[in-house]
Every structure is written in C-alpha cells, then in structure tokens.
Image (cartoon, one colour):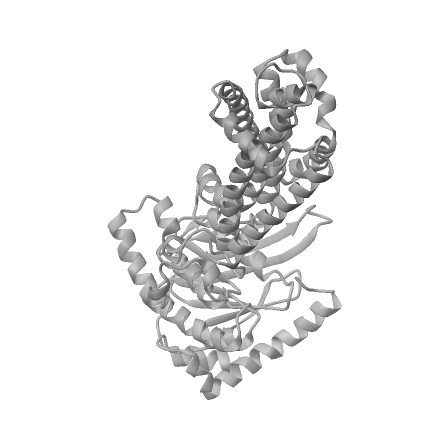
Amino acid sequence: MKRALDFVLLIVVGFVFWEAMHLAAPFALTSPVESVAKAWSMALSPVYWPHVAETAKAFAYALLLAVGGGLALGLSLGLNRTSAEVAEPIMISVYSLPKVTLYPVILLVFGLGLPAKVAFGTIHGIIPVAIFAMNAVRNLPNVHLKTGRVLRLSRWQTLTTIVVPGALPEIVSGLRIGFSVTLLGVLIGEMFASQRGVGYVLMSAIGVHDVATIMASIVLLAIVAVSASAFLLWLDHRLHHRAS
Amino acid sequence: MAVHEQAVAARGDGVQPVHVSVRGVTRVYGDPVTGIRALAPTDLSLRRGEFYSVIGPSGCGKSTLLDVLAGLSRPTTGTIEFEGRVLDGVPDGIGVVFQEDACFAWLTVSDNITFGLRRAGVDPAEIARRLDYALRLMGLVDFATSYPAQLSGGMRQRVCIARTLVMQPRMILLDEPFGALDAQTRLIMGDELLKVWRETGATVLLITHALDEAAMLSDRIGIMSARPGRIIEEVETGWPRERDSRIAAEHSFGDITTRLWSVLRDESLKSVQLGGGR
C-alpha cells in the first residue's frame, strides 16, 4: 500500500515539476495536460500507426538479435574462463564507444531503411546482454557445476538445467538494460536516417518546432518503455528474491 | 595400537570385501615437477558398507582426495578402483555431498531432491516413491514446496543429502558437509547421516576436521599427514552398527579422540609451519 502511495506521489510530483517547467519556458515544453491530450489524439490517428508499426518491427528484430546474440556470446564466454577474461575488457571498451559515431559506417554497409535501424539497435543492445550473461555464468557457484558432473549430466543438460536457470536473475537484469538501449538505438537510427518510424516523427516535429508533437511522442515512448521496464524489473526482483 | 586391537575384537564381524581401492595416488596442481603437491603417494582401501572418515590438518589434501575418489579430478599418478573397475571420470553409483550449499535456488525442495532422477529419466512413479522416502527420512515433509532461501543452513544440507540419497549410490562421499553448522545441528545431522548409512547400506567416506565427529560416526578413521597428504594411520572405533551421537558418552570415545589427536597434533604443527590452510 505504501509503495502504491509512493508511486502516486512520485507521479504527482513529476507532473507538478513538468507544469512548473512549462510555465517557466512555454516555448520549449507543452503542459502535461496538453501533452497527454495530444498523445491521445496521436494514438487514435491512423497516420501515426504506420510509424509505430515501423518502429515496432525494427525494434523487434533488433531486440531478437541483441538478446539472441548477446546470450549466445555471453553464455559461451562465461563457460570458458580464459575467453571471458580476454573478452571482458574488450567488450567494456567497445560498449563505452559512442555508438552514434558508427552510424555513418552502418548506413554505408546497410543503406537507408530497416536493416540499418535494426543493426544500430542491435549494436546498442548486444553488449550489455552479453556482459551480464557472461558474468552471470562466471559467478555461478562452482559447486553447482560439480553437482552436475556428479549426477553425470551431459553438457547440454548442464547448460539447460543448471547454467541458464542459475544465471537467469542476472540475465534478466541484462535484458532490462538491453531492452532500453536497443530501443534507444532504433530511435536514434530513425531520427537521423529514416523516413518512417516514431524517431522520424520526433525529428520532423523538431524540424518544424512542433513542441506538442515532440512532447506527445515522448509521453507515448515513455509509456511503452516504462511499462516494459517495470515488467522486467518485477521479474528481476522476483528472481533475485527467490535466489536470496 | 591398543585402541585398534580392542576395536577389532569388539566388532567381531567378518571382514567385508574391498569396495574402493586407492593405490599410489598422487595429485599435483600445475606443473608435475614444480606445481603444488596436494597428495603424496596414497594408499587406501574402503570395505563395502563401512563408514570411513578422513581427518587431517587444514590444507593437507582431504578435499583433493575426495575429488579424485569421486572422479571429479584425475590423479597425477596411481590408480583408483571402484567395484573392481579403474576409475575414469565420475562412475555410476557414487554420490557426493559438498561442504558448500549446493541447493539450486530456483528449485523447490522436492525439485532439488528429484533433480538427478528426472535428468536420468527415472519413471515418475518411482521418482515419487523415492522422494517420499527421502523427505520422511530427512524430516523435510513440511518443506517440500519451500525454496532453499526459506530454509536454514542445516535444512539446506539435508536437501543436498536427500538429493544424493535418492540416486541410491553405493558409495557416498561427504566433504565436510556440516562444516558451516552449529554444534547442536552437527550432532543431529550426524545422527541422520548414520540413519541414512544404515538404511542404504552404502559405503560412506566422510571428510571432516572435527575429531569428535569422526570418532562418533566412523567404523574406521584415516589420519592424513600435512601436505602433501597421505594416510599415515588408521584407527578402528569398534562401534556397533546401531549407534548415534550418544556414543560419545562411552569410555572408549575419549580413548579414540585422544589417539586421533596424538597423531594429528604433530601433523597440524607441521602444517602450520608449512603455512597450511585452505
């Protein structure tokens, strides 16, 4: 009950702050009421949905590749101590690189359109998923793997019944971050080199100083991102709670 | 060797066939010449169905001995025979209980206990039968649907013993399984281990650093030297098969622990001088 009250209080404080910012700089932000109303009208507009569908398609492909590739990379590196020790600093260095600097290269390789957005989303998401999965496997208690050997499990049985379930809480933490940064990558891709998608709508609105559309797009994206993140956070807490 | 002779006389039972035979086993970590010598050439024979404990100073190679006996680690030299076959990897019929908490946090107590059986494709009705037996034997009936995080350390160790037990191993290896438990829980767990040993008829090898635990539970006790470890002396307790922790009140219990300590003290001092420790 207290958590729910805290949550409501946080929302109220956020809206009050937003309204204050709007009053201070009305040319930069629309009011919360106006923004939500605009978001509602956009959500009902048949013009907006093809953009949503385009972004959703690119994001789904990118997330699939980031999660699939990240898990495969992370799990395989995590199972080999030497490879993990070599790969970890490399992956952290690559992850710290501002990925937007790679976008021209991606455009040259994939051209304008869906593949470039998917590739850009994927390179954002794959490394955090891989790092979390790798460390999750490395942190598995050795006694669990020894138990698997004593029970004469095959490598596949060990992977599917001990390694993956044991690493799952950390993997879900990685998915939560991977989800956010993959969406970020897709949107950035749409903002700079696309003629469709939510990112394109946002960039077009910036071009014509349509503050209401900018704020409404932010509201809609925030609803999607916060809902997904809240679900993954709930799953994350649930899995960690069970393990501790 | 007065204790040994009294013990053999007191047992009065026939000598059981050899179940496990260790011949000249050494284990060196790292380079065979310059690496760490964990085990000196070690010989050991376990009789079928006996309860054998190994004690020794910290860092003397007790756990290494268990690992090579379980097939988890290959000896550098020497051979181990289990039921007449030279060991090559983890053989069928061996169960191991580790010192660390080996419960799978994501599985309930029941699922933890039946984990190995399900992977081995055992018939569901048989799994249910063995689970029921193990839950009752280990006093876990009321916790069947609990997760390990909801249990105490002692309860979690019971789950691990139950998981080993349901596989019906012919030899059970235990690596300081009660090391993290308080003194009272250790005594109770010791009694439960004796019950398991009697009911299953398995050969048991217990690694422990507690002299009283070894003296209370075992038919025979092997004392290891400081690193590189080897069995330097064996002591027979002569206890009857039907026994529990109250046997510590027996007069000869003191004789046995005194005997164990008289040998172990020198080795422990050597171990301290060597900078022994785990």
